[in-house]
Length: 69
Image (tube, rainbow, N blue to C red):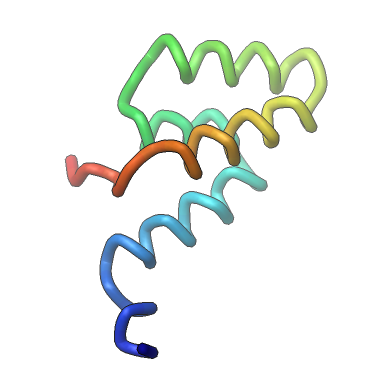
């Protein structure tokens, strides 16, 4: 059971969640690779930081495993 925690997909998901709290637009871009979603998140961060964080967390959780570049 503990071995499942250290799979690369889980580590990337945890890093994206932490990044969502620090730099939400970057976390959204890394999770989706979609410029449109990243711009929406950037606008939300400019309006007020909290909606950008919520949007980033929602995007990271709804996206599948992050794709390697």
